Length: 75
Image 1 (cartoon, rainbow, N blue to C red):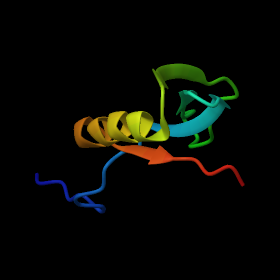
Image 2: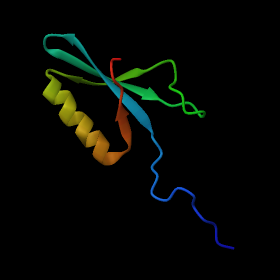
Image 3: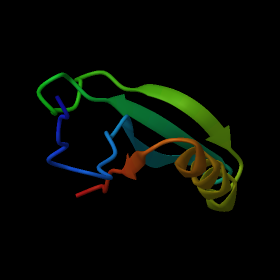
């Protein structure tokens, strides 16, 4: 029996990232994992430190190429 995929090409989101500027030359990237029901887990962790926004954006771009990640806004 052949099974059909209702959502072909859909990627599962693995995490969401959030950038915070901690000082003039200190930028941190926080990783937020997802619960089984699709909500964010209450605790995040720092996964990268950079000296500039460009440093962290380059690092995030490499992460996007390796897996499915989303950026969280400050809103």
